[in-house]
Every structure is written in structure tokens, then in C-alpha cells.
Image 1: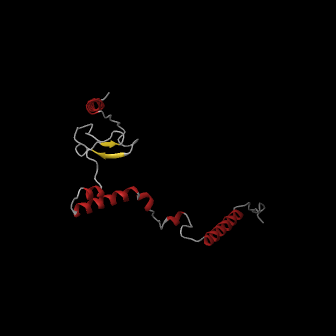
Image 2: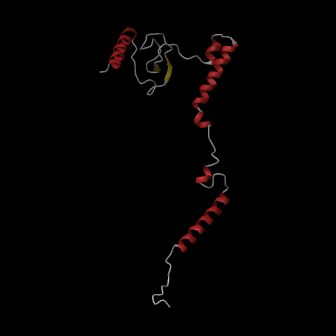
Image 3: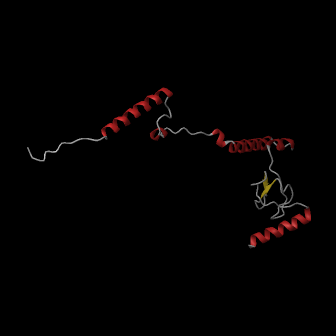
Length: 150
């Protein structure tokens, strides 16, 4: 067992004995994320629950939302800051859903990005005809050789 893992196991045993909580160690991969320690940055999952940090034993404070700030009666500027933070976090979560890039150069490789269905069919017909003409020109060709040098 490596030194860091050994230290982590020891801290889990001490914390579990004294408080009755068990450290999961998934770092919010298996369970929902509830926050991270303000002192050391350890990521806490929902399974571990609220309580002191398993690494540094500093008290864990859950992240505050705009609603929490309003309920505590904080000033308007602080509430606005929390609302802005919540909005940015929401944008970060929904980023993949809202963002779509239309590449103007995509039709360089693939025709039809900006074309109507009728234009796409016309292009396909022209392309098919061009390929057929190419096949005809690549077929067997006969050449006559005059060996007697007439």
C-alpha cells in the first residue's frame, strides 16, 4: 500500500469511529456531488454526507445558492452575485444542449449542408451521370497497329 493510500485509510478509520460517517472515496463519480472542502479541496459525495472533511477535518460547508442567500437576509449585491453564479453553473450544465456550431466549410467535404432537398437530388443525378460517363471512357479501347509499315 502506498503512503498516500495508507494515510487516507487511517483518516477514514479515525473519522468513521469518532463521528460515525464512512468515507466513500468515489469523489462524486458514483454518487451525486454535494460540494468540496474549502480548506483542502476534497470532493464530497452524497454517500459521505455532511460533516468534517475526511482529509483535513475542517468543517464542510455546503455551497450556497441565491435562495439560501435570500433566506439568510444578505444584502442585494451578494444575492445578485449568487444569482449570477447559479446562472453560470446552469449554463455549464446545459452547454452541450444549447450550443451547436454551423460550419460553413462543412460543404467542402460534403455537399448538401445548406441545400434544399431538390438541389441535393439534382446534384446526386449529375454526380451519377458524371460517374457513368467516366466508366464508359475507362472501358476497353481498341487500337490498330500497322506492323507492315504501310
